[in-house]
Amino acid sequence: MRTRRRLLFASLVTVVAACGSRTGLLVPDDFDVPADAKGDGGIIHRIDAGEEDALDEAEALPPLDVRPPPPDVAIPSDCVDAGSTLIYLISESNNLYSFYPPTAAFTLIGAIACPDTADSNPFSMAVDRKGIAYIVFSSLGGPGGPGDGALFRVSTANAACIPTGFAVSQQGFPSTFGMGFSQDTNDTGETLYVASDALGSTPSQLATIDVTNGYNLNIVDSFNPPINRAELTGTGSGGLFGFWATTGSPDSAIVQIDKTTAQVTNSSSLPGVSQGSGWAFAFWGGNFYTFTAPGGSTVVTRFDPNDGSIVQVAQTSDVIVGAGVSTCAPQQ
Image (cartoon, rainbow, N blue to C red; front, side):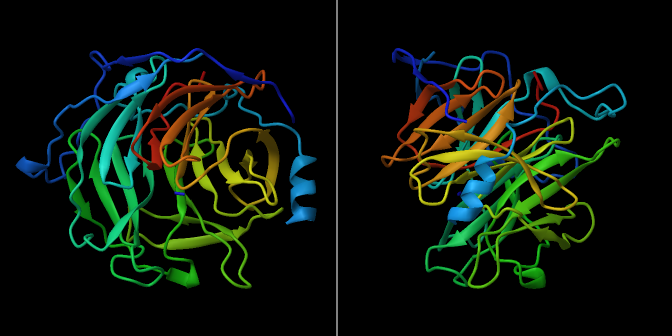
């Protein structure tokens, strides 16, 4: 859950929309799909649109670099229906949605029913290029409570949910975290990156989880300069970005992160975008989409890193706490 530029707001018109022929990614053969876990295909309404030193250091960084990958960067070879890949969302009420950026349309895939999560809520989500969502839960009773840090695999085709073998709090890493996949540099694989919150004297850290072999967590390093309570998203060109609430300000910012060192290398602020009670974000088609709940319901905002425009494009009464997008999604 988790550069001053012109703020633009477009006219708001409530309509009912669907995603046409675009669908969720395919379900791998090894994913057991319960018959009662399929979504009902429902549609929700959308709106059309058009620490002080650390903060100072972050604001002095250059803006985000989201240029297309150079010719020597490998193109993913196992993408499924990449041109129609969607952003996937999970709400605090366990609803799994897809979101199609060109039309700002939400589609309800279904309510997830992960085992042993009655006392916990979804906290964050990432989606791999095969269409499997990874969702981490937080306990309603607070850190260490029932279900805290449990990680599940969820099908974006029908909301079916199965547990993973992830062990909570490996290497002292906090049980809940922001998360996002990023393509491996000069490779056709991808890696799941996770970001912790600062905990006591332990600063916020970047780590990886090996989802292909034992779900082992490995800490990369502490973020430098520090960012806290960050959500992550990655790109098909190997980029990794964090969305966080800037210290001492109601606003937020998106930062670029060196995956090998946890160094924060670039930053663009989002004046007027307050994270509120739940937040998530994703990169699609050259733009960043933030999902924030400053007033108790989620507002969707599009940030264009090329011209700095910030446009509110949709809203929903459900509180979105996680977003995931395949690294096969359009990059520009």
